[in-house]
Image (cartoon, rainbow, N blue to C red):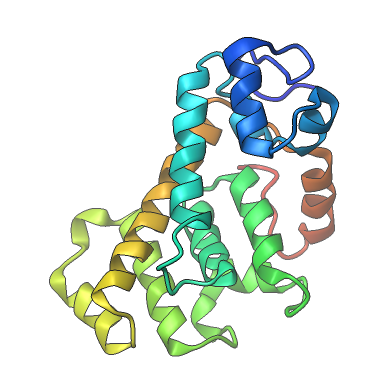
Length: 205
């Protein structure tokens, strides 16, 4: 299975530093188990295991290990999805829209995220964060202190704003890794894309 446009080294073929990073990311030692768990966005960096490790650490520290963050997983997934939609990144849009949707929203939720997320049944506080994520991604040169004030007035703290900006920066980075290296969808993502194409057609991105 092709993982990316660029040459890659799969967990089943890996040794030394590359295998060590795969083990660190997945928490598995068996290459066959690593193969089932590892995502293509990391495999795409396998020729440079030091960069694969630093990318994982950036994501891990920002999204998973930041115990002080008030952002919950669904809020992070929604921010990640808004960033990815605006960057037209199929891989990240499909994965994080599905994760954000969970069992709480219909499939059409993904269309609403793209067309007008302000009509979603979510808090005004979260809508303000998503509005900021869209602006910082699409028009970063237009960010002004008023945007920070809007986040504060909606209920986010100064510390929260740092976490929000970091999450936005992380997924702008990840989107460009994915798009730039031609990272391919996993089979399960292709099934989600086919299921959701009536609501969010990403096939021509």
